[in-house]
Image 1 (cartoon, rainbow, N blue to C red):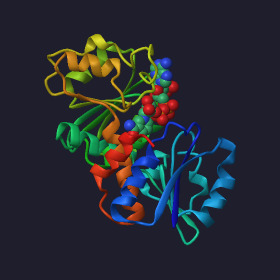
Image 2 (cartoon, rainbow, N blue to C red; image 1 turned 45 degrees about the vertical axis):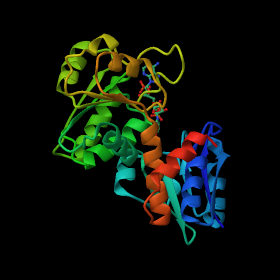
Image 3 (cartoon, rainbow, N blue to C red; image 1 turned 60 degrees about the vertical axis):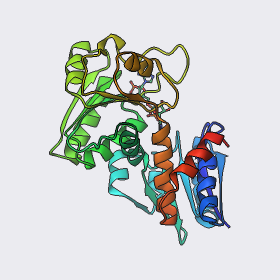
Length: 279
Ligand code: NDP
């Protein structure tokens, strides 16, 4: 039986096993997927073991960047983003890919029925999730990617890297408290992607000044990568702005991992049911 795992620290909250095992069961594939707690310092021994015993694995915080020097191959998009969440083990070799961006694109299509090509996209945050997804959206033909972040230097750096990766794209950076710039960007944006960790915990500060959202923002769609209702989503809905949480992104990135590993179309309904069971 082929063995798969997801590794991270923490990992107890992960719903990937429920999702992937439902997909294997759907096709009757003899495979099993589990979660494994792996600390930052344990990545090298884990990878040596993985080469011999696993068919593939997913990675979450804090391993998505740390795994890269150990890989035998990596896709250009994952290399540019500096983020790998899916590894296939083939003949003892480790092949790295990133499916977070595909997951986001899938979620935007599923929730808003709107493709990203030519669209103006505003990211809040520029950590691992924003990086992995922004390179994918750039590669898929986004018209502009603007980044607002607490640490302005990091947003400027990502904007510069995206510009080099996809020279046709417009990229800009600002602080997340620069209300004047954010007001203008919101008026021009098709998607606002919330990719900070703010909203994970009750009582977190909002990731931007929520008063900037208004019913006049006719073209805007708000997507929060967090998969429960955050104050940002609540505020967007109150303004009549279409808004969605991160669940479809999580299912989308898992679906793409499954397709990479098995070569079969992901059974999305079965995976969604597996995810909701929360195993
Ligand atoms: P990182 O730790 O890499 O990045 C965190 C981001 O949040 C940075 O931009 C950071 O800003 C910002 N931030 C953190 N604290 C504050 C604060 N107090 N005030 C302002 N900004 C702050 O995290 P990830 O990129 O891995 O994850 C980000 C979010 O994406 C999480 O909420 C996670 O749940 C979600 N996610 C969802 C997925 C899905 O499939 N739905 C998949 C992966 C992630 P700074 O640069 O200034 O530190």
